[in-house]
View: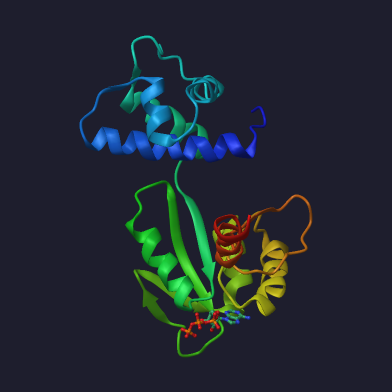
Length: 206
Ligand code: ATP
């Protein structure tokens, strides 16, 4: 499959969300300019992105909402659901577990891990929490490739290295730590304070 730019993937995820909303409202067709308006991207980019995923609908007659949503979903996700684990069941970790439970896509949160004995062997938002000591075996036995890290920054590197050593290939890092991992591991850094500082700069001083 041809390698698609990260920004394109980000846009496709937004289109899929908007198409899901339209489908739920029983809308059957959508024109590219409407999808562009809803998702906040220019129409020409929307048309190009949809060509990239191999959608053959006619922009002149509007895209079929159900078909297009399925086409993007098939493009973004491998068949079946992708199993994800979360490490660090603190306030943020629990909020993410809750959020993931409310979503309806092909990503399934299968387990959480923590080092605090008061948090392990408990279920948070439908997800069982195991002790961190069992994580390597769990990853290998369940062929886990994606993990979310919500431990304190000071522990993030050690956790991330253990994850990668066991077979994880993609990490969503919610800590401010800059992870040093081999180049084949895909890391998405989502430090909220960094985003907030950026917005504050542009609102206040930029
Ligand atoms: P709480 O008040 O519930 O402890 P918190 O958000 O203040 O939540 P943090 O100190 O940010 O907690 O830690 C996040 C979570 O990561 C906690 O549940 C903590 O027990 C867990 N944690 C810390 N170090 C590790 C580690 N090395 N391995 C696994 N989990 C860890």
